[in-house]
Length: 477
Ligand code: 5AD
Ligand code: SF4
Image 1 (cartoon, rainbow, N blue to C red):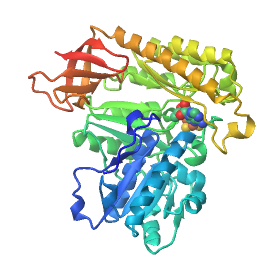
Image 2 (image 1 turned 90 degrees about the vertical axis):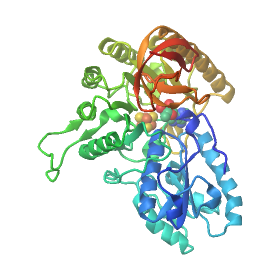
Image 3 (image 1 turned 30 degrees about the horizontal axis):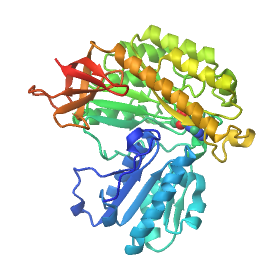
Image 4 (image 1 turned 135 degrees about the vertical axis):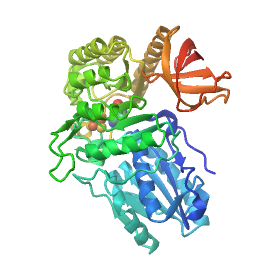
């Protein structure tokens, strides 16, 4: 069994997660695939679509790369480090391949899109390269590769949303599931490679989204997270052929409401929101439904208006602050988190201090923090010089991390003595005597199981008795 890598990119501990669902018995399949995922939640969700396509092609999943006939890496290009990790991983697969010559190795996702044929030339062991919009062609590509040819499809699409493919839930806790509602991004933040690797923004058919969420609920899931690069710009117009046509266009606010109405026992989350697109309509829908979680991930990226402009974020520092005020006004007690980049091109100490003061103003419960990593082909790479020395970037990042640690601790201390409704996700990492769950505000809370007969997937009331900067500790009521 290969080690599961842990690297602090996007979704903390999940980087390099290898997965296979327990429900499918690999023995019933003649061929086996192994898939490992990197990057954002969207990529993890894509791996579930890939798994579904592969099952229909006669492949069963395995968690053990050594017994696989097909090894896939679903890759991320967002920072250089993410790409380096994957390259290193590929060299490790070289060993497995030399022991098993028939083994096929495929690279999926953003790196496949970004460096296409370079992967085939440089990484001699790669047989298949497939971009994020071309997963339907995998069966044909595998066949080509089995015939000894290199197989590539990195075409981007304006339509593909995989709406009709039921994802196979891989590594799910059976309580919370991810549902992709749109693909691509049109924002063109200058630092970001996503618009180039995942293509134009398109929204998935609202009715297929509702169906997928309802199916999850019927199968016992208690929480869905609606995923997209910029969920607030979701916009779907039903076609004349759709059964439900005539209801008019579906915005993110109306989609959220439709999902919330599936059942009061189904929690709804969403990610990611762009500050420029989150409307009052959305905030009022969040307020109206108890089961829509009071938590918004609202990346600021920088606290300096000058840097925000260079990043093409299309808002100013003051505009962002007003958005924070609006959220706090409409949804008191809402959890808010952010993404922050340290050391973007030309950033001065004053710009950096603006970021620190804006973090303080926003009082984030949590942030994902990065130093700027120049990506080939992005607007920033073409327009600006990556002129902040790495030592300065890292020092600024450390100051940002230290401040966030203090803010997270303060935010947790404010919860001491309060009672929250918690959805139990499973055993705590440290002890099977303790449950781990989340509050509506997305805070992780750990509490003793006691003798009470509750189960994974139950809603319980928990009183906060203690905390660290990352976790609340509580007592079951
Ligand atoms: N360098 C550093 N961080 C980046 N992000 C996106 N592109 C870059 C880059 N080139 C961060 C942003 C984004 C998150 C997903 O990754 O903060 O919101
Ligand atoms: Fe990248 Fe900006 Fe789109 Fe997010 S919103 S994926 S940061 S371009």
